[in-house]
Amino acid sequence: MLLGSGDHRRSEKVRLTGDAFVTAYPQGWTLAVKRKPALGARYQLSSTGAQVSGLGIPPAGTIGVTIDETPASTLSRYHLAGAKPDAVALSQNATQLLPNVVGTPRAAESVVRVEAPRRTRLDGADAAEEAYTYTYASLPNVQVDVLSHHGDKIVLVELDTEPGLGAAGQAALAAITGDWRWG
Image (cartoon, rainbow, N blue to C red; front, side, top):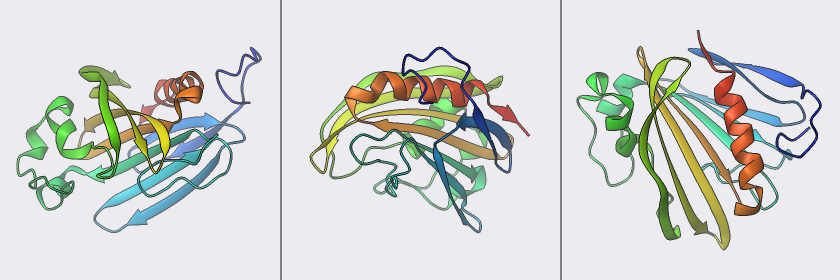
């Protein structure tokens, strides 16, 4: 069942275990996992089974949630395109880390930050959240990012979907982050 679809029965969930966390996602969604030594892991969830792009953007009609789990030390060596490596990442809170980890695609058009960075919590840990709308490859997109720095890990949970699926996407994101437990 797609969360937010109007069906009020208890939805079944599938457990997702990362290196530093455990959460759950809606049954019927698909999961793709990619691991890169020293860079961490990427978990990409798709509401329809359609492949989510490397930028986290799903095709039309699909809700995509990407979870990146990265060692904090990685930010002192690597960065988003155009940004400098963050030598003090280990001492920064989630709000300070946000601009060094989160971005919109370089080719995105009509980018609007619809939710300014704000502090929040992810299973009790310091977190930050912000949201954007834009068009990428002729597809309108809503992007919501939740970033947390917990121990030696930085975790980014990113929702991407078209505006018409925004409410269902927000419900799925809330369910994933609501079930979040640090390992």
